[in-house]
Length: 304
Ligand code: TXA
Ligand code: MG
Image 1 (tube, rainbow, N blue to C red):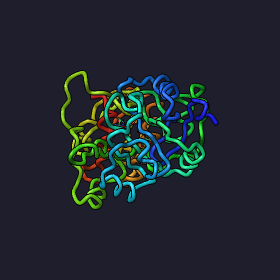
Image 2 (cartoon, rainbow, N blue to C red):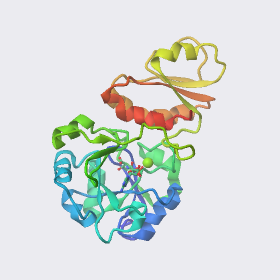
Image 3 (tube, rainbow, N blue to C red):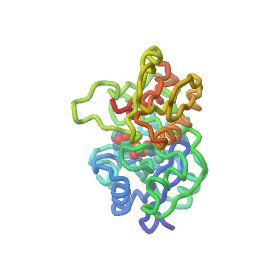
């Protein structure tokens, strides 16, 4: 088996495709960083088959973690816990915590079951680029650099898991995702505190994530018409509106349902990016709870 001998396996999850390696093998995990071109201090998520394996990776498992795992696993939720003695710095970027998730995709679960151990896996894309939501995306990005690509069809959720940090006094939402704050609050009794992912960061520390190659502009719906007028750039557009008259490299009409928008977002961004435009223009979805995860990804994908 590729994982057992230290190789890299790209596999589908319900969120995005992961680039997996044996989480107990430092050399194998180093391969992930090499292939992704990822800085060493970025921790990886360890994927496990079920909550029964939490003890292997975490040394303190609060009641909140048990409850969330019982409610959402297998599923698109990652828990950050204090790491177990013996889990290496190579998994956690030197931090005292570890990210754990039981994915819901049948192919991922089968892989985890057959392998038996934990599978370290970030998204199967080059660092800073758009996450893959199909086996073809993985092939385009990483091709021959991985030992095996398991094709489980397109991902149903399409954006990365919700991440909740339970290693501190109070739960903190590190990354919004398909599992919403109100669903988490229903289990915990109160909402996790928001991380400062919306706050301005020091110059130079803000990393581009989920980014296409062409410059991406996120344009508020109210300013859409103003921006559209009198521009001679070749634009590739993702908008809720129907295509108007005028020259566009590509016009995609976005789905008004946040779940469908999220599912198709990364593959749409890839298509927009590949059409040979000067800029990608995306119409900002409404600032409502059900759009929070999508808005987070779009803000990280934009270039200005
Ligand atoms: O849906 C997902 O979570 C996908 C699939 C493959 O499971 N994985 C994924 O992995 O998105 P990646 O590496 O692209 O993003 C992992 C995120 C990073 O932002 C990382 O900083 C955070 O998880 N993370 C992992 N371990 C952490 C820890 N111990 N403390 C804080 N953040 C952590
Ligand atoms: Mg990623």
